[in-house]
Image (cartoon, rainbow, N blue to C red):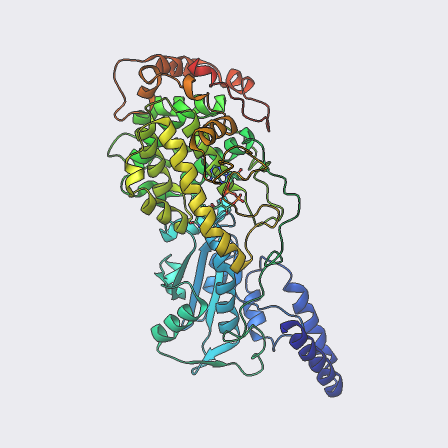
Length: 516
Ligand SMILES: Cc1cc2nc3c(=O)[nH]c(=O)nc-3n(C[C@H](O)[C@H](O)[C@H](O)COP(=O)(O)OP(=O)(O)OC[C@H]3O[C@@H](n4cnc5c(N)ncnc54)[C@H](O)[C@@H]3O)c2cc1C
């Protein structure tokens, strides 16, 4: 519908330009259309766009403008001192941000086409905080702990890295909030009225996958992938180190310490386990209790990973660039650590995972739901490895069920990997009882251990040897695992690297070497 409308408008503009002989202005408009393909703007170009006449056929909304660490200050400084602005801080990997994207673009389209009765604009912009440089130089200074966050403010506010969080997640709620905040009505700008989508019109066109049927043959993963688990570990640490805001939160030190100890005992990749052991052993030295956040010292630790930037996803790779990836890797990491727990390690695991997701997983909606879920009785009852494995499977399936609906509505899912109650029969034929179709938890438990590389039910590592590594506070007499960690700490890093499993190797059912 919109496309036809834009085409008609485009033809209209061309005819008008031809009749008035304003070939020059038409050329200008065409060059604008070229500029609009770019995501990052040159400083000042948004203002030039703002001054240009309305859009041409097929032109997409100019707002929200994509900012980055290089153009942020310049573009903000060019705002008129009486203008106000909305800034969305988001991350490309964050699913809640993907669901919110159409609504924010609707807000952008609305304010793009309107001015206040005094002729003032609401500038609408966004910045991708998954980019490390954007995170360090811009996002972190706004002191926000989760994505997406929309901030409202004046030029002066944003120059001082302040902004008022905007409540509400629908386009209508945000527009209403801005209108009441600025105590003004926004009217269609003369000559600019059609430069963005109408806010009261049809819902925004969904992504390609909306309503798309899953492919007949889905390439289900047959076991978790170590390379993805390692990549999610590294990326998670990178996000923590890049954000002073996360590290300054109350309880962050304890949460990070607990997480590192848990990885030291249960990470399925030997290099990550040893890297975590090194950090766990030196943690009090690196970050003494009560001291300032030692971001630089923490940043010097490479828990694992090869360096040289983010590694490509393998099993977690989406069929589109904006799906799957990091969050899939985080789930895989959590499941794998549960599968390798000592038999009585459930409670300590739960505390470490709750601390990590609650403090450091920056998808605000994800961590909020997860924390609410950890308050339920079955979460408090988690004590054994089996409890932890089945609890996480259940919670993950609850998220799958919720997202199946959300992704269908917003078209934000991956068409090649639909959300299902997992594992489907293609992945585990005997996980459900044939007669009733109910889950058979004994078989399911065996399957989950195999899939995530945990030792079989009767071969769990013994509690006395291994649990000490993940208990708070760190026990004083050295256990076998801490002595191993000390030995590993003395070994040159080169040796540890040599023991890294080949990237992409599937998990084996054998317990990690450090526990044998
Ligand atoms: C803790 C956490 C909470 C989240 N909460 C939200 C939220 O509230 N809203 C939101 O939009 N997104 C949320 N996400 C992200 C979301 O769950 C998916 O990660 C994202 O949509 C990408 O999905 P995916 O297709 O890669 O599969 P994922 O759901 O990421 O699963 C990764 C892999 O795990 C396996 N798997 C699937 N289900 C199970 C199961 N039940 N048990 C064991 N293994 C399984 C499959 O092999 C699958 O490919 C959350 C992520 C995490 C880590």
